[in-house]
Amino acid sequence: MKKIELKFSNEDEKTVTYSLEKPVEPVDPDAVDSAMDEILTQNAFTSSGGELVSKKSARIVDRNVTEIELP
Image (cartoon, rainbow, N blue to C red; front, side, top):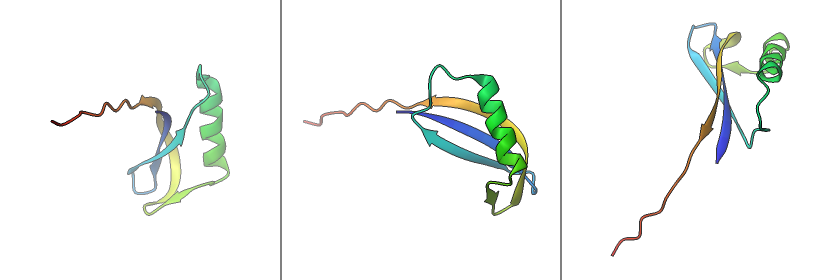
């Protein structure tokens, strides 16, 4: 399952990560950047370390799980 992770720094200078499932692909870096700016502008989220103050990074994470049959 793929997720997009948006990483921000908070007032305590800690990293805060928000994950969203099933990102639209191909990912538009400009749209992601704009969305992250909007999250910061509107103070849409807070964390235990205070408000989000800056963007850090964004990435797509693809997790594959393969079950192993035991004898």
